[in-house]
Amino acid sequence: MSLSTTQRARLHAEVGRQIRQSIAGSILFNQRVADRFGLRLTDMQCLNILDLLGPVTPGKLAEYTGLTTGGVTVMLDRLEKADLVQREPNPSDRRSLLVRVNPRKLKKMSTVYAGINRQLESVLMETSEAELQSVAKFFARMNAMRILRPE
Image (cartoon, rainbow, N blue to C red; front, side, top):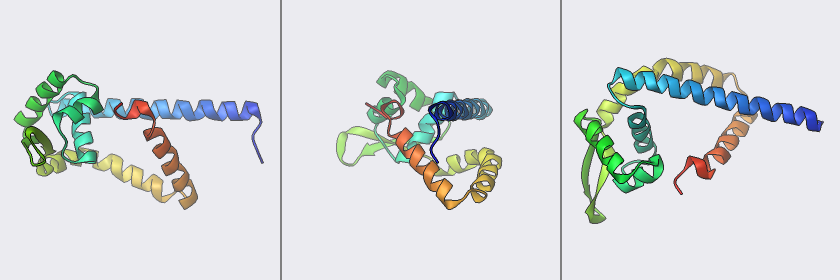
């Protein structure tokens, strides 16, 4: 059974509203975590990017964050001072550096997310495999949008 144009428009609006609510909740929660650790929200997202991508150059971080290279340098100085990242020589280009998270510190920081992760796992366990496949496909397509990745 297919939806009418009106029903589909309502469903699109509801999905958009749910996405906005999820983004707002995530940003506000991450701001509280950042405050707890004396960091900025952008610092937290830099750590997230490094955790997802692995070691990258400061230039790549500038692309992903939209910050200037100078802004990335200041951010990395804060993160390095907090012992959350380390800069090391890039083995494939001796003129550049790689930035790597300190996994020990990141693990300690991730304990703050334990409650949310338990709730998420509970929701995932209650969700059918077909629904999970649809959700994974949906988010993969959203993450492929230019706004969510570097140019």
